[in-house]
Amino acid sequence: MRDTRESRLLLVLLVAIAFALITVDIRGGEQSPLQGARQVAASAFGPVETGVASVVDPVGNAVDAVRDSDGRHSRIAELERQNAALKAKLGSSDRDRVRAAELDKMLKTAGAGQYGIKGAQVIAIGATQGFSWTVTVDAGTKDGIARDMTVLNGDGLVGRVTTVGPNTATVLLAIDPDFTVGTRMEKTNEIGFANGQGGGPLRVQLLNGKANVKKGDRMVTFGSSEGKPFVPGVPVGTITHVGSANGDLTRTVQVEPFAGFSRLDVVGIVVQPPRENPRDTVLPPKPAKPKPTPTVTVTAKPKPTPSGATRS
Image (tube, rainbow, N blue to C red; front, side, top):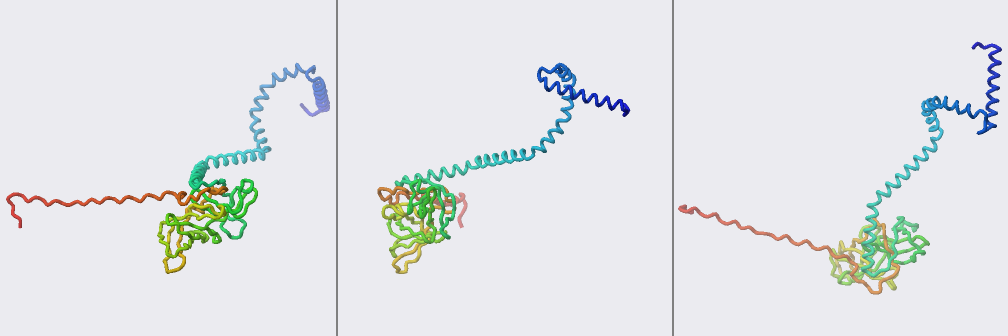
């Protein structure tokens, strides 16, 4: 069609008619006089629209993906976070088993000594008290914890409570240089005082300078009045070195602690001391000494001399 005055008038007329029909259709709603025509048009052009949509949808989806990219990234990040949390939960099963074993061992130790304990977990290393060797546990005054209570685990003495808050407490470890605890030797009952050395073995001074002690001997806590700060009978450690006796009034020995301070996790705070001194009953059984392998002596028999032969 050529661009003439008549064609322009026709185009304007068609547009006006279209707007008029749209207005009538909208005002009529479901009762619109054009409802039948609209259904006919839908039947005729529906398949075409469907085909066009199948072609255009990927483009539209791509546009929507760009528009919703921030939301998608957020959902992906959330899914990744949940996946990491699930992996951590599944991966912690070994840790849970180790922790359960530690708890079981600690309960057996507490049962052997008849200690009333409150279980706690180490949640921080190094407290606010200068450069002291301390840990923070997740139990405080709300759990019945007070200052100067003995702290142990399944292996033995860990330390004593020094500072208490409503929900946490600070424990001074036995390896701290300012830590001192009275000790009693297994069987011989020799008394001494153990001091921390900032890691490594404890330094124990026995009151008897002529005490008969040797490497491998073990000791427990002597105990304090009313069980504070130390209850009696808690395993302390094993002698690894004995200083020479030079006629001094005391004798110094080095003691390897039973507790492993570099891997503390579950601990028990003694809230009730035992009625009776457990003495050495809390110490674990000594490992059995290996039986000596029997030696067999084999004596070779002399070979018989053949008959008729003479010996030189």
